[in-house]
Amino acid sequence: AAKRLLEKVDLENKIISGDAIFAQQELSKTVVEKGGEYLWKLRANQGNMYQRAVAHFEQMSDQYLEQASSLEKGHGRIDQREILTSFRIAGSLKFPYLEQVFRITRKSEQVKTGKISKQTVCGITSGSVEEFEAKDLLELTRKHWAIENGLHYRRDVTFKEDAVRQTAKNGGRVLAVLNNLTIGILRKLGWENIAKARRYFNARIDEALNLIMTPLSLLL
Image 1 (cartoon, rainbow, N blue to C red):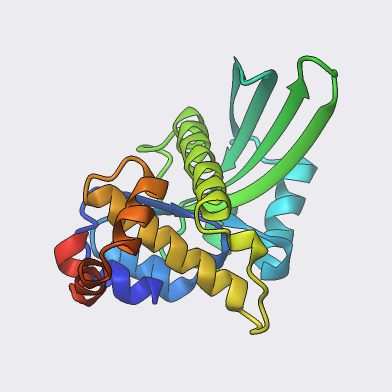
Image 2 (image 1 turned 30 degrees about the vertical axis):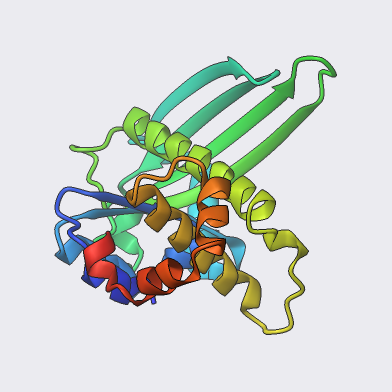
């Protein structure tokens, strides 16, 4: 579904970022061959590529590793992020147009309680080291996580996603994709308050149905 959607969208000079679910070979080829760049997270269930990325950064034997860090204060916490990037390992991984592999470590401290949490994520990108330095990738991933967190909040609060009982194997994943698409379309139509948009279309079913029947290429 994501591949078919991207085939209809202008990706020239666009950076498409996403969770590990999007780190698929055909999808990644589509992004680059339509003029864009991809930036995906990796997860442990993606097997050899994830394990090799983790091992590469743990060994710290790559003399060409690039590093960058950032520090942010706000919302009652202090966030420190550090990224390591490598172009050397990318050449040995069989993945379309892969240029760099990266690891981000995020440490977050709650100002009031002093509680510290730590998260480490690996990822891949088609962006070359000449175009995207470590500091650039760090900023791109920061923006992606900010959007992702905002989407999850809206999906849960406005669409009650977490309260929906799922029986199908991939039901939760499909629901998240559909809700993200809905939010994206509403934003494109000029709605800033998603809850208000939902109430609007709940009271105007005919308009909602017409919107559903409109080709995505005309909406995005």
